[in-house]
Image (cartoon, rainbow, N blue to C red; front, side, top):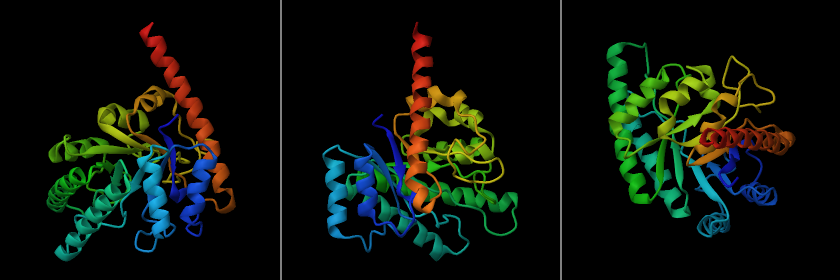
Length: 280
């Protein structure tokens, strides 16, 4: 299916982006996410020929690209200069994505710093809402869709559960921002079925992987404990990209991506079957 792709973070940082693009095309993928948190894709050092290749593939419709903005930012950092720097970095990634013809950009919400309290959480949440609104305006100007990822499993997250993520995005405005659903993260807090029930209509991007029940493993579904069958029809209908996002495995990374694609395609086919039966 045209919407199924993979993230460049599935491969070691030592693998050049040119090799990752070659794998994408050789294996018949027509979607891919560029991971800015890996040194295998640093916009500041990427060759102009590589950027041109990505732009050409995007513009001629061969590959639909998403981009993951820097994950090591915190819109709720107590230091105002660091908060400002975080927003600038994300805005730069949005403009960069637009220049390459990228369609979706994923951003991480912030977190409370210091000992958690109701007061600090509300301040942190408002700081996130303000920053993400401004980033969403930049995204609109750049012609890309900003998608906020569920990081409810992380300690001190401004979104400790899936309903709080939905509430924050509603404050930003669903006309401005959509949700990037990470299945692995959802499996650790609330559960995948409940997460889909709460935010499903607002999901425009999916990170697909599993976990082994205790932490954010980003492992293949064959290795994990998650049951994806109840959300098969939802995944089949997601309007954006379904991105395989695995922890890199060195020389086994390519096999892990392909095994996960086989699983996901079978899952999507079962979801399509349910949808068709529902119309009978």
